[in-house]
Each structure stands twice: as C-alpha cells, then as structure tokens.
Image (cartoon, rainbow, N blue to C red):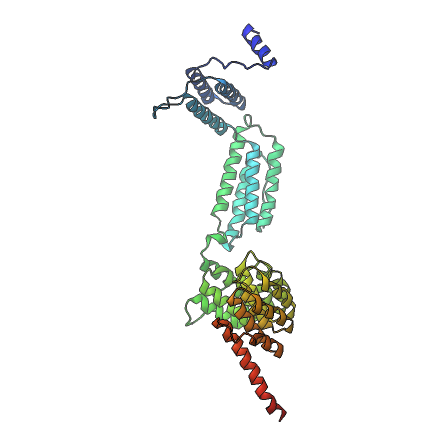
Length: 437
C-alpha cells in the first residue's frame, strides 16, 4: 500500500474529509473511451461485468472530483460534469442492452402469452387461429430444447391452450440455460416467443371489431327482414322487445353508445318490466347507474327500495340524490319516508325540493309534520313551495290545512300552492252537505 493510500484510509478512519481525487474531465473522458472500446469487444456476461465495474469506478471518481464550473455569463458554455454524466448514463444503457437474453426472459414472454390467451375475448375467427399459433410455438420451442412440447390434438379452448404452455415454461426452467454457453438456444426460444406474441396479436378479438360487427356476430340483427324504422338498430331493438328478449335489449344498451339508443333501450326495458328486466336494472343501480335508477322508479320496482335508500345520504353527489329521490317517490314505498324526511334539512337547497316532492308522491301521513316544518322554516322559497305541493298530494285535511296557512304570502310560488290547498279544503267543505244529503 502506498503512503498516499495509507494516509487516505487513516483520514477516513479519523472522520476527516478526504480530498477530492486529482482527476480532470479529460482523464475521465479517456476512461469512458476505454470502457466503450471494452464494451464493443465484449463477448460474454463476464466481459460486461468488467465494463460495468469500470463504469462504477468512473462514476465514483466523477462524484468526488472537483471539476470547473461553466461560465454563468456564457449561455453556450458547456458543463463538463453534465457531459460526463450523460455519457456515463448512455454507456450503462448500452451495457444493459447488450446483456442477455436470459432464460427468465423467455419464461416471462410465455407467461405473458398465457395471460393474453386467458384474458382476451376472442371472436370465432380468432379462436380458430389460436391452436395453430400455439402449436407452432410448441414445435419451435421443443426443437430448441430437444423436448416434446406438442399440444394435444383437438385442444381449441383458449384456457386449455394457455395451460398447455406450462410444459414449455417447465422445460425452459429445467434446462438451466446459461446466457453465454446456451446463447443459440435462448435466441431460438426468443424467436419462437416473438412469433407466438405476433400470432396472438394477429388473431381477431372482439375489441378489433366495430360495434355493428360485434352486434352482427352476436345475432342482434338476425330478426330483421323488411323494416321501416331507421336506424336499423332501433328496428332490431323493437323486434327483440316484442319477443321479450331482455338479453338482446341489454346487449344494445351496453354496445350502442348514443343517448338516442340508450333512451330507447331503457324505455323498452321499462315496458317489458319482467323479472329479467328488473334484475338487469337493479344490478346497474347497485353501481349507482343513474339511468337504471330512473328506470326502476318508472317500473315502480318495490324490490329496489332497499338499494335506493342506501343512496339517500349521498350528499357529495347531488345529481345522484335527485334521481334517487324521484325514483323513490314514483315507487311510493313507505320505507323511504323517514330517510327522505331527514333530507328536508340537508344543506343543499337544490336537492331539498326533490325530497319534499318525493314525500308528496309517496303520500304517507307521517311526512305531514316534517313538510309543515319545512314550509314554515326553510330559507328557500323553492323548498317551501315544494313542501306545500307535497302536502297537497298527501291530501288529508291536516295536510291541506298546514299548506293553506300561507295564502297571504308575498312570494308567488308559495302563495299559489297555499291557495290551491285552501281551494281543496273549501271544495271538500262544500261537498259535505251534498254527501250528507
């Protein structure tokens, strides 16, 4: 060990700062030149390890070196440290690119192909192509490994084809391939996995088809002969509704991304209003699908009340609340009364009227007192008017009397609802003698 090295180690042990190595940018650049030449001549993984070790040494010296700073007043001045760091990074990338491929890269490619086979929705034509693609890979990989990887005759299911590739994975892992000694074998396997990936990419999947092609392949247009309705999707939809085929109506709803067709699909399901239609809309409602919730309200689906009540407190989504409140009002189930009454005091004055109207549509007398309180105390004239409207819909004498108290209001919409309640009371009073007679 030299005296300088000994002194440096003693300084480090003593906790003293070690002086920066006396190297120049030119020295470091020359060492990178040598590393580049060594990389070009490298033939084995060990050679690449030596180059990487050289780059590690250069990086350590570069970090510790005291290099001149560029002239801040000169916009075109070059920063030697930045240039060296950039070159060092490029050489590291070149080392990585020159390494391998390895047996684990082949295994990873096969496993990616298995995932593609299992997770892709293939068309009929695509499924027909898969056995040939997988068999060609199995033959090529078997030749490279001197192993029998033949796919069993008659294997056509995509999941079964994916499972058949397990044999290739096992064979590659058991072969113990070395990146240097078995470079030719690995290269042949990489070529085979590339061909496998290309073959799967070329096989037709549903996402490759246009919407009308998908619908045609699934028989959506089969009932059509001569028809007058346009577009043809509407004609087919009407025919499936006539036949009571909920599945095909749902297929159109999911496939045809237009407001026009969505409206017609939902209306068809509402008109059909059978168990299948309800289950389909209920399933979508459970995912907070607002058109489905609206459809359930129109269908008066009592069985959906429990699901819809869960959304009553969705204060962060006022639009959802409005749709839910309207649906609950149309269904008219008394289980929704208390949850809706609780929302008469919620913060959002654009949603409170929907709660009031829903209570009026349900018509349960338990809502009279909460609605009367809203009419008396709410700061919003729209909410007060909605509460009076709801009291009129409930229609009992107590409800009408609570609403009729505001006939002298200066606010037109409030006074109008109150007057209608007064008129209803008067009409009932006038009718009593006739009824007695």
